[in-house]
Image (cartoon, rainbow, N blue to C red; front, side, top):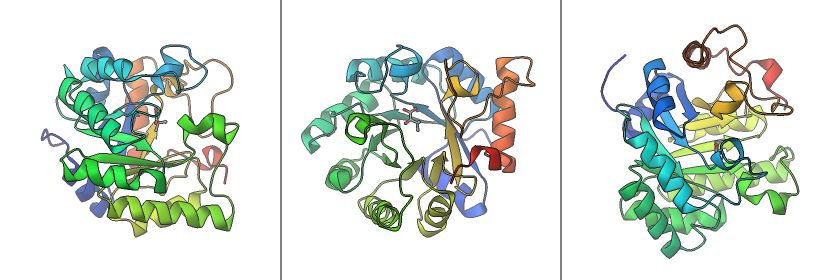
Length: 267
Ligand code: KIV
């Protein structure tokens, strides 16, 4: 494995070579060291931290202070992986707000890329951010920050019209300059088609195993999430004798295409 830092360009090269990209959420320095040692390519300081660290019911209460703090905790020790930070709920509702949020997440937090949720509504914001040098990861399909509007965490893009809308949004976001796309809880066929059609890497979560890479919430992978684990996730502590071993098992399973398997793929 090369020790060169991972960049958007190296992820595009991995996509072209058919090498699967391994992404995982990470919220602090201790886990950053473990994830990097296991060979994780992309660390996402997800606003899922609101649920898994803070015990909130949704990601909506997460604010910019929380995100900057946790991004800094990771960037203080990060060596090689690409570091992405989520922009919290409504922090990118206007291009002006998005500039301020990106300035803090990248300047104070040390992120190399910011992630935001949504399609047509955020295309102009993505264009503005990328024109001023802030790389963006887009996020389509299930948008957790919109849970109150969606009325729950449900698969998206299951019928022709909604699938076509996701496809159109993905193309517009790429055209606006997005460097990467996370597709959450969409049918495998749609994710597979977009992984081929788009030039930028497509990272799936609950989107089948034909994406260019996979992401999971770290605490789901470690079996720490209370209640029922999402069906698309997997407890990699089963059969592992340490956290480090579980992360290596995840990295190996994603790289080899064994995860997600049919048992994790709903549609
Ligand atoms: O916040 C997060 O952890 C995410 C992943 C689920 C992709 O956005």
